[in-house]
Structures are given as structure tokens and as C-alpha cells.
Image (cartoon, rainbow over all chains, first blue to last red; front, side):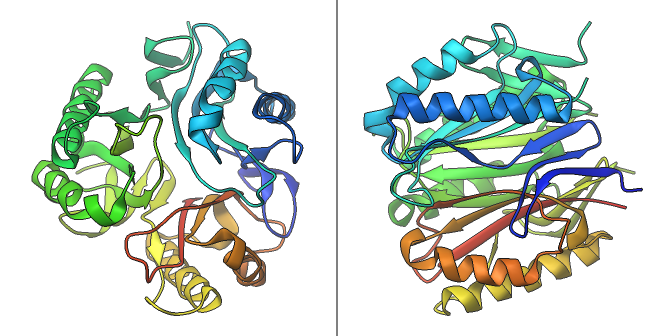
Length: 117
Length: 117
Length: 117
């Protein structure tokens, strides 16, 4: 039996990998073509779902990195959706930058790690 | 009592999160408008301060990721400031790329992790 | 004796840092000027070599982040090389974006973490 647990494993990546009390999530994206707000909300719902599947939740986030395809246009809307979702008093170490993503239809990608209970 | 310790926690992020012997720092930026050298030095001073607050120091860095808003113009100056600061024999795994940052006034952002003693 | 092991340590970075059962690799790049496929294959060979040096292998990857200097032009070729190399059933949490790298000759950079046995 391995001490590494992988969730939703495909030929390219796993959506989550658990090791030594930490879960590492793959980069999550939203519905192509949606607004920054819609994509961010869809991403945060995916993160919630994967964290539950891993046995933890957003109050135990360690890190979050956020990439926007246009940081000038999207920073405020992403932050509004993020702050509405984040668990007060339990926010992770975070960093945000601009990067073109896998296709031009993706405006936001978020990658998080969290501790297991 | 939680096994996660968060430092300087706001609604969007914590400046540092400690779990299982590792401290994760949020992305640190310098004074808007300063040169690459000035911003890098200010960032490294912030990192020193947060590492001390977390109970560790730069000799125990694990990783460093560095983003420059113009890697062609800033790589040499950032590296000079970085190498003047880094602890000889204790340098982290590092990677560097170009990314537009939260506002155009930011030329450098550095994100590190470190082990606690 | 330190609980941190560093491999190939220079004044700027170490190529690998081991702590608490996890190895963190520095960003790996390929031969400047080669194609995306060639650079990706060279990077994956470097990763294999460093993982062996650290005492582990690609079946124990936790995370992989991939940066392409032109994601539109390089995503398919990078993924083909990646999937040919990846260990079936043991793929890491992964994310990919576009970023200009240290010099224009670099088209791909990959940063991984892995668990020790």
C-alpha cells in the first residue's frame, strides 16, 4: 500500500494528490467563455468538492496561487469572488500574477494546497 | 487548538502559514515604483522579517519562486540582490519567470517556503 | 547535522532540496534553441536524474508546474512528451501556463516535487 493517495488520476495528471497530511490540487479552471466572476466561482466550487473528497475543507488551506489571463481587467472581480468564499480567519498564503492559460477561453486558474485534519 | 498557525491574516490572505514544520509565505512585493534592485531588497527584508516571526531564517529556505514583470530588463539586477542576500551553502530550489503582477508598479514578486528548526 | 539535504548547491540555488520526506526540485530547462519536444525530453531526463539522486523516482511525484514561452504553439508537443514519460496511475497534481523564461532560447520549464520512499 502506498503512502500517496491520488484522486481522479488520468494519463496527464491527478486532480489531487495526498501525502504526509497535505493535499495538493491540480490547477482548477472554470467554464470556458464565462466571465471572471463566473469562472472564479466555478473554480472555487471545484476546489470545495476536491477538498471534501480529500477529507478536508477550505478552513485548512495552506497556499493559493492564482493566475489571471488579464490581471488588469480581472483582479477586482476575482478578488471579490475569492473574498466572498474565503473562510474568515483561515486564509492561505497567496500570490497572484498574469499568465496566458491553456486556451484563451480560460481567464482564471487557481492552484491550492491544504492540510488534512 | 489548530495545528495550523497563520500570521498577519486578512480577508484575502495570510502573510505566512505554518503547518507540519514548514512555513509558506505569501507573495512579497516591494515599494511600488522603485528599481528592480530596490524592490528585490525590500522583498528580501520582508521575507527575513516574516521568517523570524515564524521562528526560522533564510538558512532554512526550501523553495523560492521569483516573478519579474520584465525578465529581460530585470534578471541580472534581481540575481545580484538575491545572491548578495542568499545564505551560502543553504540556497533553495528556485525558479524564475516573467509575469505581469498585481499593478504595473510592481517589478518583482518572490514567494518562498522554509523549514522550521 | 541538518534535517535539510541540498543537492548541487550553488550561490543562487540548489537543484534539489529534501526535507521531511519531500524533495523540491529547482526549475529545470532543456538545451537552448531545441524544439519544445526536445527541450521537454531533456527536462524530463534531468528530473529523472535528480529524483534518483534524491532517492526517489517519477512514480512518487506530488506536483508538477509547467511553463511554456508560447503555450499556443507548444502545449500539444509538451503534453505528448509528458504523457509518454509519465508513470501510468501515478501522475502528479499539475498546472500549466505561459511565461517568458530566463532567456528567449528556453521554451519550457518544469518544476516538480516528489515524495521520498
